[in-house]
Length: 235
Image (cartoon, rainbow, N blue to C red; front, side, top):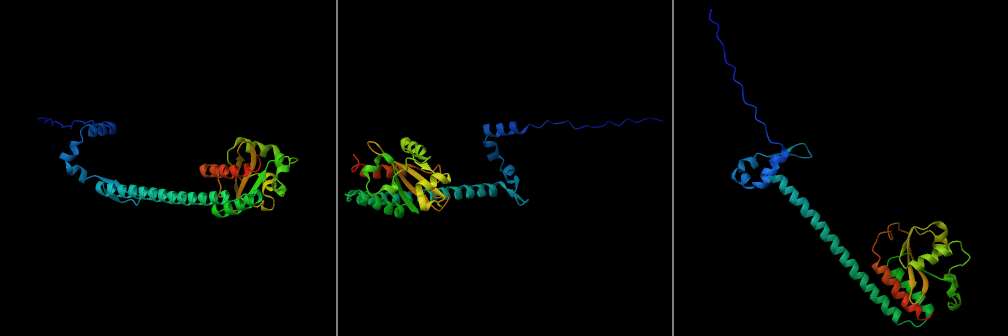
């Protein structure tokens, strides 16, 4: 009996390039996909819903998302620009009011009123350094108590000449804001000209009104404006 031998055919094993090699090739040869549009047409991507979407649809969604982000950024910029313009107008009004005042008590009262109204705060007060007490008749309630255990801390804040944001510890808050000690956010603006004067205190019942990290340019300019006028009565 003749034994028949059957040859077994085997397919050659083809090693596929890894992802990095494919990506590098396509970047170096972008015309490949243009010459083979059927490859792009057959590409699909998984979606959050579990269904598959085409490359074109995915690109359109990406463009819509990017467009929405740009639109949101533009709206935010417009909003900030309008707020800054409104703030500049309030500064102009406050400057005119200060220029027309020639009495220290009127300046203090007017600043409290205008700042509280123009800058949407619940409280606007002053804390003058105690060494100026003799030059501030009638404003003793707004003068720092030198016997307070927080006096040194407050003098240091004035000396650093940078806005300080709250919340403050209860003792400091009560010392500075008195009957308004229930405020939940605040900013302390140093007042100085040829010498240190004290602090302009802005307080709010909203926790988000004054927060550390917010812009301080307008706050510093406000302090300089008020300081310049008050210093005319103290020099």
